[in-house]
Length: 183
Picture (cartoon, rainbow, N blue to C red):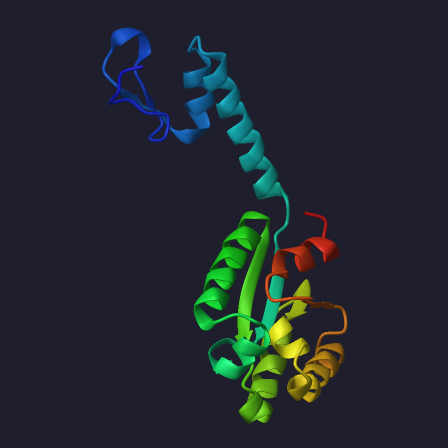
């Protein structure tokens, strides 16, 4: 295969001819003619993986967190800083997406709980959610026990068929989803 022809762009050079572009649906046919079994297997595996991911329903998850309303004291109580939390959230969202979850963050403002609860109710009613995750930031500190209880009760009232999940520590988000859904 010539260097200018790549598997990523779905082009190939048949028998020394110029590169030819192929459609994704015909990629397997084009590449299966190559003598390299490794290439054929990787194309087959990619097709299987793509077909599986398209056939497997994704799970919709609403994730309640303090988000931008977390204070430095909130983060210090968990033994992390804002940058660590943001890095963990980015990693979690990427891992969750790859594992078949569509996670939508829901920021809760403990200083304006009425507004946050109205928004929580609206979000829970907006569609059929597979799960509602309440973050460690809300569940753990004693100062937010009332907020935590209110979120649990609101979820039960507004979306009784939605699975409620609790994160057990600041970095346990993927384990929480895995524990509740087969991944």
